[in-house]
Image 1 (cartoon, helix red, strand yellow):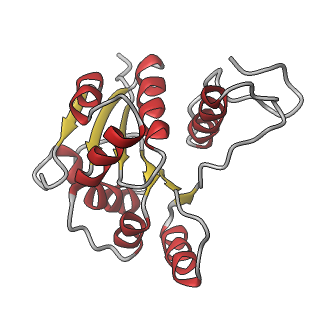
Image 2: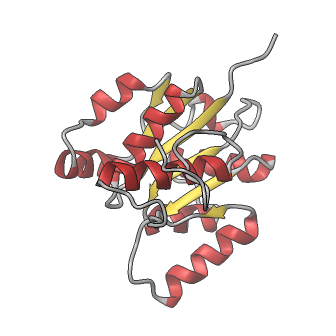
Length: 192
């Protein structure tokens, strides 16, 4: 019997909430068991940038947790997952992860992924970057995190923001080894 794949998705308070929404939708459509954590600030950003509330997004996920619940299953290495995405990832969240400062569930679940050797992708959403930001990214990368700023590609001639977002999230999922039709490879026909 093949177990359903489990992915943790965290949405932190950086701008770019649409990336987190779309990541959850794609993972659900691909048949993944999703474990969602939305930071308090991300809940505010969701309201400001989209028509989606944190509660509506939690209803889509297979499981959702409060950001201060350090007793959640995803806070333990004995709870197997196939990896984690933090999309978008704020500099504050990046700093906590990079320095193993697990003061909330997002940072703890990320730390668990790193210590257990599971993939952790951080969609760091900040610009411009100063040397402190770059240093935190380097620390996280040295610990094993994948640093993947949500930089859109244009070779597929996207016709809408939705196509840009789909392509970007599709690339992130491919980086984690998750096959999907949203990622347009260089030289291939237009993405779905």
